[in-house]
Length: 338
Ligand code: NDP
Image (cartoon, rainbow, N blue to C red; front, side, top):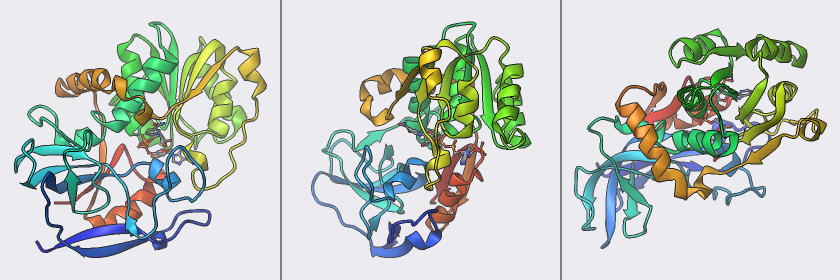
């Protein structure tokens, strides 16, 4: 192998992101300095937050620079090491970006973490036992604060984050209700993931229809809501929140391509004395060990289920990413690179 295929961001989207915003680049294979490690990526993670990084505008993180490798989480194998803590063959998780190989300054804490694949598949460290899993854990446990007997609702319920939220809520004795797009995803959420119910927001495509369906699915009202989508879905759930309900504002994917997502009933925050808290999982590193321990144990023992959609080859990453923003993924979206 003498070249390293990469995907660069070359322009910023005007409205919807397109494949023209990305470019395939063949870079020379990098060589190592002392303290560095060469990692061959097995899987790249595609995540909704990447859409925000493509914009120039102010956010919680710096924009992705143009003409550079797109950022992204990766899992892979050390192929060469000039750092005493890593050996060829070690399985690792890091932020290698949209490319086949990366050189990592392993001396910098947190850049590269060794993982054990004896009982947990390598790819799961990008999903249920990785950033999306910890996101689900943090928003549910620390913000929704579910108690046994309560009702928890989550949107984008079949996805990497949503699927974990509902299963963790069930494990805590709650009624778990999902919202997802289409009958196949809803069936999977109930039959495979064990939620009590799942509503198809494409079938219930207006506020009245969705809030009525929520009424039927949540006869005791909603105590905790884990929000991944925003817009009409948030409005419909807010109409059914119980007094002193908690909303973990994790994502608002329905607005990531620039669509307006007004909130129709902000007065309900006051009238129902709701707590609504946004969060960014990378700002809560103190909970990661506790969350990963629970998630890892549940996955290793088969109690936490998840699904993956896998694109093949780095060239497929832009299309797969755009598909994620349109709901074409079913579970965690990955790109397999070997
Ligand atoms: P998913 O695996 O859930 O994939 C995204 C899903 O969002 C799609 O499959 C689709 O599901 C749904 N979706 C896309 N567009 C729309 C739309 N217009 N309206 C309704 N649903 C839509 O992604 P993740 O689990 O990785 O992420 C879920 C959410 O969590 C995102 O909002 C993401 O930004 C957020 N997040 C936040 C973090 C934080 O720190 N705050 C960290 C990680 C993720 P469907 O077909 O069901 O519509």
